[in-house]
Length: 109
Image (cartoon, rainbow, N blue to C red; front, top):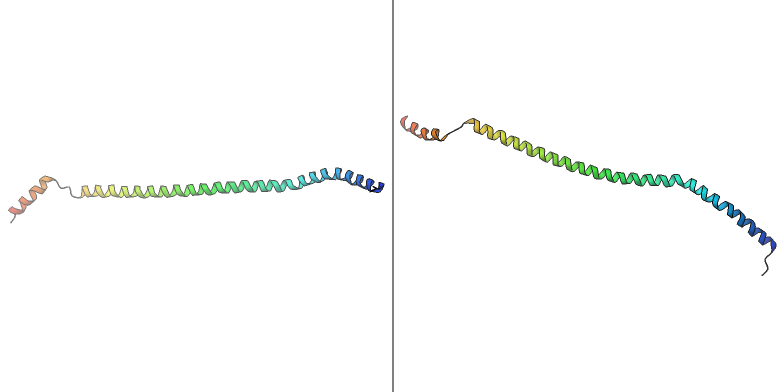
């Protein structure tokens, strides 16, 4: 098989052109794709921060529920203390008064 001089010349021109065009294509691709890659990286970071925000929102809602539960318990304790105080202040009855009451009832008739 004989190789013609035109084929050798054409191969040399194609190889020389590719030697120059491949690095140019690489640089062009890097310049064109860099904003896209950065946007994808920012999206992933935001997605990660969204997960963190969601977790913080869950924790805050749990803390709010606990705070409301503690508030309810405190209100019940205050109501109980007020009830006991009013009960003790309303009519203090001692043992001497209980013993004297039946004796007074018998003399009155």
